[in-house]
Length: 291
Image (tube, rainbow, N blue to C red; front, side, top):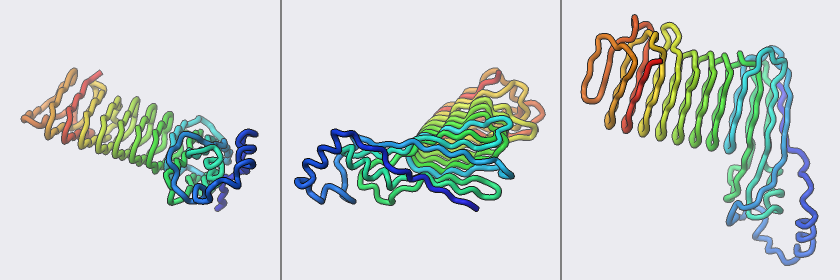
C-alpha cells in the first residue's frame, strides 16, 4: 500500500502583501497569528492539486471529505483515475489564509483493491474555513464510497454501487446503472435516470427521483421533513407502499392493483409485484407519477 500526501509549496503572496508584512511586522500583535480565532473569512488563499493513478487491479474508490464540493464522473475504458481540484483556506487576511494553507492537504492511499482519498486539516479551525473542492474521473464500473460533511455531491455515469453519506448539502446522482445507498441530514436529493436499487434516507429536505426499478429490485425513500416526488415507468412491477404522518399522497398515471387507501397511506401492487417500492414521510407530501 502506498500513500501520498499533497502539501505543496505555497504560491507567492502578492508583492503588496509581502511589503506590508515586512513594513509592519514589528507592529503586529503576536496574538493575531498562530492558533488564535479570526473575525471573518473575507480573504482566501488557494492552490490547485492533481493526481493520476493507474487503475491496475483496483475496483473501487473511497473519499473522506470535510468541506467543499465533490464531482465524480464515470469513464468508459479508463486506464487511470484522475483526481484534481483546489485547496483553499478562507480567513480574515490573505497573509493568514496563506500561512494556514500549509495545514490543509489531500492524502491519497493506493491500496490493492481501492484508492482512498482523504482531506486532512486541523481539528480546531479557529473559525477559518478549510475547503477542498474535488473532481474525479474513474472507471464507470468501480464502486464508490463517499463520506462528507459540508458541500454538494454530484455523481454521474457510474455502473458500480454507490454509498454516499452527507451532513449538509445536496446530493445529485444521475445516469447510474448500479445500486445506490444515500444518507443526508440537511439538503435535497436527486436520483435521475437510475437503473438499480435505490435507498435514500433524508432528515430535512426533498427527494426528486426518476427511477427504472430492476427486476425484483427495491426503492426505499424515507424523509422526516420534506417531500418525495418520484417518477417511474408505467410498466414497473413492484409491491407499493406510500405513507405520511402529516401530508398528502398523490398517484397519477399508474395502475395500482389490490389498492388499500387510508387517510395516511396507500398500498397496492404494480404489475405482477416482483419488486418493492416503499415511500415514507413524516412531515411532507408524496407524489408519484408514471411515464
